[in-house]
Amino acid sequence: PAGRPLAGRHVLVTAGPTHEPIDPVRFIANRSSGRQGFAIADALARLGARVTLVAGPVTLPTPPGVTRIDVESARQMADAVQGALPADAAVMVAAVADWRVEAARQKVKKDGGAAPALTLVENPDILATVATGPDRPALVVGFAAETEHVIDHAIAKRARKRADWIVANDVSSDVFGGKANSVHLVTADGVESWERMAKEDVARGLAQRIADALQARP
Ligand code: C5P
Image (cartoon, rainbow, N blue to C red; front, side, top):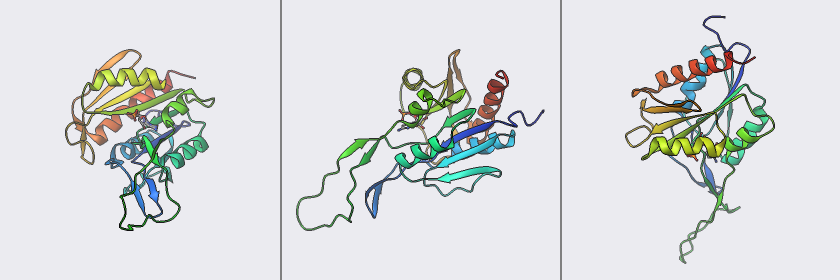
């Protein structure tokens, strides 16, 4: 129906940062606010989709009608995403930590000796896993936060991760935690550069494009 073109569709969205524990009281994280991903979940729900939002640690309200699963680490996010499949589309907006720490079971103590060293281990790539897995959604969308060569990196990322679309974010100016975003939509057909606009408007535009793409399929 007009206005609810995603009725009957399930869309999975990831959003926010991940926290990677160092020990039971400490973690490493990144500056993602979750704002863009939450806005996308909201926009998809408004178009009638059943939305599962797998959220890292953020302080944002759950958009109306969205099913939210809260996680902390990348591995928890990966498990929650696998558990939420199948879906018609997946939009992976989360700023997943590339590395986790080989965490200590007990709090690391300052004992007057040398400073402890953190050993980093690569995290699973959730987007690539979903895009190449047996339950692959018909449409897989990734995000790419870059500070330079934004479009070239996004084109390479689209191919490497087997995503259908990459939304390339120019984060050189004030995007993390901010209200606006400048994006380029990279698809098999080429690159579309959108004007700088509010994250809610990026979300609405993207949700409509997702509806159009899914409508073209059975
Ligand atoms: O490689 P990079 O982290 O820049 O890729 C960004 C895209 O990949 C985003 O869509 C992000 O959600 C996704 N990603 C992921 N799992 C990772 C790293 C990134 O799903 N471990």
